[in-house]
Length: 258
Image (tube, rainbow, N blue to C red):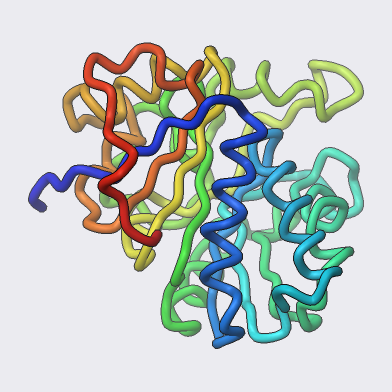
């Protein structure tokens, strides 16, 4: 695959990044045509979802024609557990918008056969016609979804072992560090790259090295996010702190819709 530069926009602070990201998503949802979203979780996404909820409550957008697939879920964590991504999505988005029941899909981390669940989820994405717009965060180690460093760019939805750095970063969502899951189901990198458009959001100084590696470093499995440079339709929104390690600052006036 040929390398293609993503469109990069650096915005002053985290709140402004969330506002800009929300504007891009709202623009896609405004005409209320059927759309399939790929959804991420974590602190980066919460302010974006809050703005989407507000726009829905104001009647600006509707989720009635939206379907969604979440990137990942922990293995062995029940959907009703506060640390699960099922609970996160219900708290931050699904419980507050008008998406029809059954159209929001998240991997089942409690499945008896995790490999079969991963294959089923991959097949569901394909049967839905793929993902129109996929939202991504980026880990401090360069992961996207739970595709940790070393992940094959040809990987599909599968069970993975989480890096210790990822477990430490996510410990805030669990009652004690020992209870942080060691494994998860995640969309693979090849699955991610099949989305028709991708919007990656990065905020904070802890993401600066990963952002620089993804955008300016070699395209390598050591930085899974660098695979996004093999996709032709990627937008990256960063605050000043997350963009601090970039050698070349982007010009924000040369972007197009995500």
